[in-house]
Length: 447
Image 1: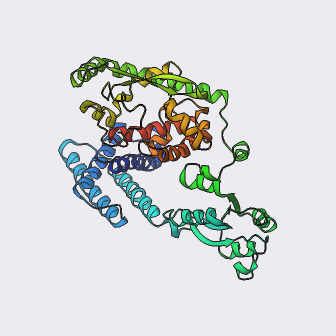
Image 2: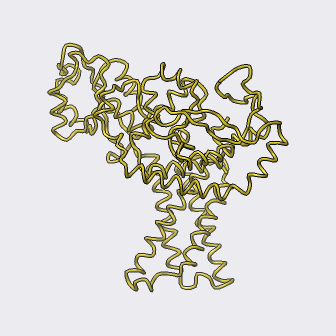
Image 3: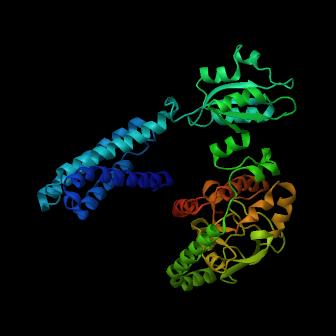
């Protein structure tokens, strides 16, 4: 099973739950709760459909994600499910008087599965789902935003590019004699992205204000980049943007809720995994000489330092000659068992102790070593802002970007870390934890 298969399985499960709900609504309306089908029948029906869909998916190897393949697989899966249901009904009497429910559930499921795929495939042709974007600006920043729209895979449609010259707001020459508002209305523009590399004398204030007052959404480049990529465009962010932008509001109640969730889930995790600690200790000892646990100083909230706990995955003399260095692919310092521990993320389990102690959180920016932090703080703007929250066992950067092993990776992960801090919520944490399950199951990103 691959990550894409796991994602499809989760999606199909959600479609089935929604299909069951809609299929049961007529019975609920006629007879109340007494009119609902038995829960066991509904669960078995969903399981049969899900299993048949997964089987057909696996048999149809190399089908890709095109809409025709999804329709073909859905039709074949429902045909197989119908045969299985018919066999169960004839052989054991299951689904007696539930034929209508089965037909309704399969119908809704087919609609959701195929319809959702069609919308994802062709949503650039649906005006409501793919907003038209007009780029207003100049220089490299405007070019970057134009490229972002063109490479958005249909999430946005480029409606034009208006270059702002240094002589002010005379835009008629580039708009075929139309005003900015007239041009936007003519081309059905819903979002205007102001992207100015050269700001002095270039911003057409009156024209843009008219568009804003007539219902067209106006955003700056940094905000549009954040919306499109779920990370921050730190090259175009100023300290004032941090101060005045929406977000970065973590109340005492949210911190309390996060702490309660950390303690509850970490305690549960340790209770479930503690019986395996002796076996893990034995395997580590047999694999290479040295301690079972690896301790290392990391930087936490408020730039404070703490000692992190992990199962040892490297040789004891890994940095005796080199000092602190980034990990790399096929790192020779990693032991045979350590390679498995890193890829499966099992080596991270002892960090739950750090979470209970209050030094870390389940979700947050990954803690870096002080040696790296001192360098990165000098070279990357706003790097210290990631220490506004406690570091996490997992995080938004961890599920969205591969393992970081260079300054370039640190910059990219900082974009995600700052986005997480800006948009923090308990639901966001739960989403990241769910995404982490997929990363762990398929061993993505470890080194």
